[in-house]
Image (cartoon, rainbow, N blue to C red; front, side, top):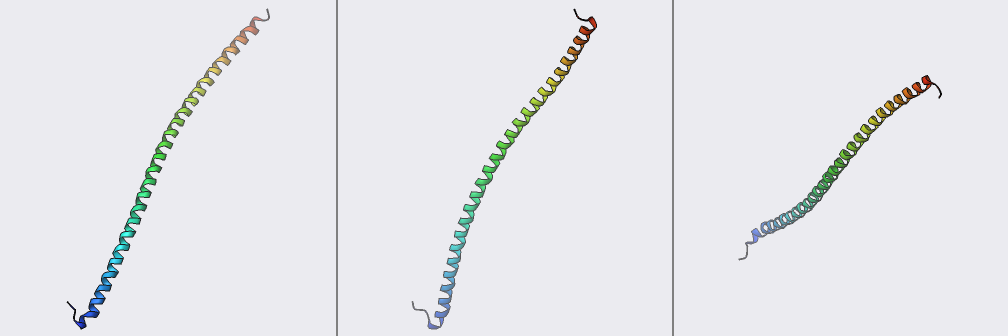
Length: 101
């Protein structure tokens, strides 16, 4: 069917508008796909960073435990050294009070 002559400008205008809407829809779809790809990429990075944080926390906990163990050993060694020095001082005091043999 041939449209009426007075309707042709409106028809062309409607067709042009339809093409513009289709183009806009395609661009929106492409933008959506790009944004979704970026979201997926960022979620992957976040997951990777979380794993790195967990590993760093584990290492920090192990290092802290080692530090506390060494600190405890150092304290114990210091106490033993003090006791040995006291014992040595007592032995020296006795040997000087007894005199040379």
